[in-house]
Image 1: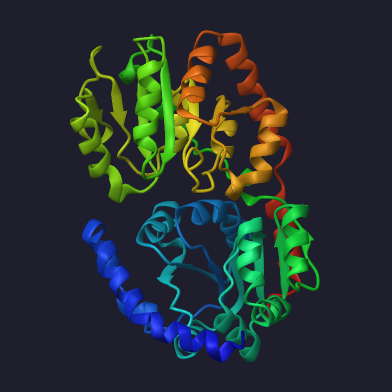
Image 2: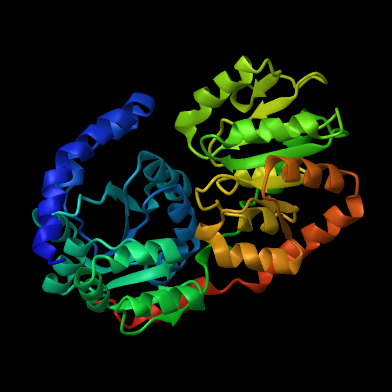
Length: 419
């Protein structure tokens, strides 16, 4: 596909993109904020310091970028870090993590004029795209204006690789115009090279370098006391649409009546939806945000808070990692391992395939394919504290032995930052 056809299709689809913003704004009004930025118009004045720009689409990418951002701020104190996002939750996460220490805006839609305005406004010395964000007009604009553009923490599933392969020369040209690529795994590197990338370094997964917040253990201990120190606690972390019902089905068959289930939906706009599900099923629950006592008859805690996932892991005995029981690709299981908790993952982990396979091989995680298998695994582990401890220790080892990606990415980009 020539790039002009790609651009024409984007222009034709633009009304649908605006309708999608309006649709999302029904549940999350923040989508209606900063709309001019999505077309390359920025109210903020042009930066006075040289800019290092990093694009992190949403929450997961922003959190994964945290150690990299801190290293960049330390090594390049006279530069300003600019984070671009595509979602309000990603932008809010950047504010939560870095405050005013970095700038935050939306990356425009991938239209030539919008991308040119973005680059002319911020004039970045270098750009870093997190994971696999291939925007072909952006790549072409950076190439034309001489802005080094690196793809870092790159991952590419077989399904995504097939999709990019259908674009043929457009994908090949885009990959070849990138300044450098740092892939998470050898399998990711092979897929990128098959699509036309001339050279790919393997730097590992930045998510291993994300350290738990200093107060995570203390907050987790406080939550556990509130939940009931003697009650076993099962955490369903980062669940996606449709999974909460499956988790509740599984918990009905767990042969222990004292288990407290904590459900933390992946997306905050779904907190109300999950609360309604619990009401329809007649399940006694307490919302985390209400800070009300958790009685013995309470069956579920609805984790409707932001930025407390590490504390939830610290407070639980066993954790299921959402997005994996249904074909969403799975969420981040590294956080559970870092906190030393046994992890259960479903069959769909293509977003974290290498990490999931490694965690299972280490003995830090177990794979379950159905709600029935999930229920059986929960029952088995809660009745076997020694196995839970071994899995937790294996998780900590798995996490610590795979760190170091940030240093490799910093070394890769150091030679490309324009003076």
